[in-house]
Every structure is written in C-alpha cells, then in structure tokens.
Image (tube, rainbow, N blue to C red; front, side):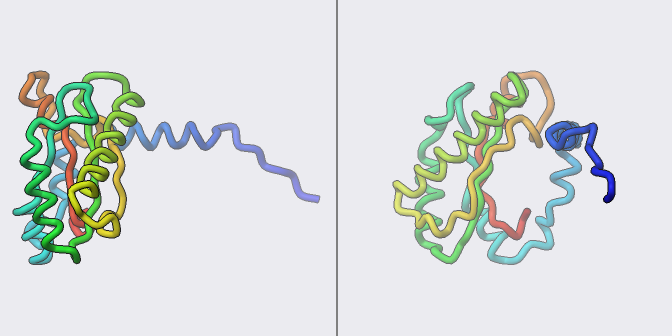
Length: 159
C-alpha cells in the first residue's frame, strides 16, 4: 500500500499568497493588458456609453451621481444583447477583507439598481468586488481615493 502524502501548506495559505501577488501587481500593468484598441466595435460602443459609478467613503448603497446610473440603465435597456459584468472597488484605506466585502456589496448594489431600472438580469454575467486590488491611482489624496471607490460595468470581451 502506498503512503499518503500530507500537505504541510494548506490551500488557504496558497490562496493568501496568490491574493497578495495580485494585490501588489501594479494597476498600470493590468490596464495595459486590456485590449481597448483591439476590442470589438460593440465593446467600444459599450465603453463609450456606459460609465463607471462612484461611491462615497465607506458606503455601498448610495452613489455620488445617480444620473450616471440612470443613463447606464437607459443605454443597457436599449441594447438587450449587451452582456456585461459588474466589478466593485474600494480605496486603499482599510483592511483588505473589509474592502473586499464593501466592494462586493457595491457591485451587488449596482446590479440590483440596474434591474430595478428595467435592465434584464440575464444581461448580467456576474457582479463581484475586488476590494482595493487594481487601483486606478495610488496617491494618498481625496481625488485618488474617489477614483478608486467605484463600480465598473464592463463587457466580457474587455476582460
């Protein structure tokens, strides 16, 4: 009978290491990997018309400018074939796990708000949060923090 191999490093430790690697990957490298110029015409039209939604500090159920979400919903209702994903983010302040939960709730808030405004739930692939991973900027000032407290609505072919 063969010996049973036991792992000294549990899977959650491996997941923590992978999360740490993703956290320290610079955002400009991530953005550079996005195929914006080579995107399909539908994806380019999507990104021109559907804008990101911004949140106040430590808030997930209220947005800074509701008119942006209204115009996003109007465009998405007029284009029922447009499928998309919702990604929530948080600024650099606070604990990693707190920001993951906060950003997830932001994505879920955007999802429910779009559905309430008449967008078909079948258009939404997923809605998740990335916490403070993948920031748009890294300065320690109010403008930068605001840019990172956002929810992105993106077509899957830009991922």
